[in-house]
Length: 187
Image (cartoon, rainbow, N blue to C red; front, side, top):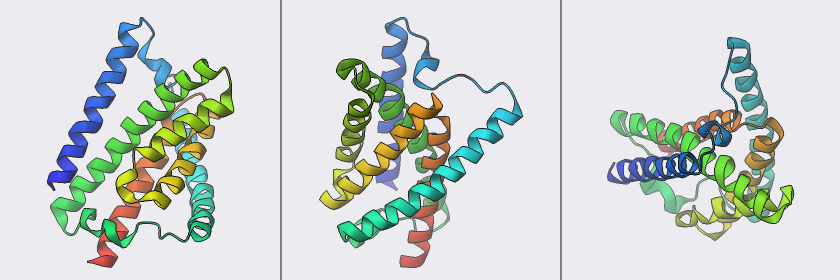
């Protein structure tokens, strides 16, 4: 539980720093998120895009995990999995936080910065994905590669949509479902 709370605080701190930096630069905060939703139809469209992206990306991740010979969540990560009610609730809160904060930080902010710096969209996406993978080193080297590739898929989605919202939804859903199911089946 302490890991969950510390990670929640750290993620929101990074999010706040990105928002403060964007505001300080004079740019609108929506630049790192994409335009606001103006209708229920737009919300449902992004949910549909997130669902389709999640289904396709999980299939790709499954193949890549098999090729890299890694499980979706290695046994050495069992300590992090939720076991009962309060832990499951905190895990879901952490997953939603990861979806919002990590997509804003890595795809909304860093990816845009790397694209501007390199003047090359694929390079910006790959650099942001590499940073995203390295941010998950606690899961092991092979998982860093897999998560980096997942980050590249999120980067392509964010660039294509011009928004991180579908990625936020898919990311939160993926982390929530993976953690809760793995926690229930392993404990």
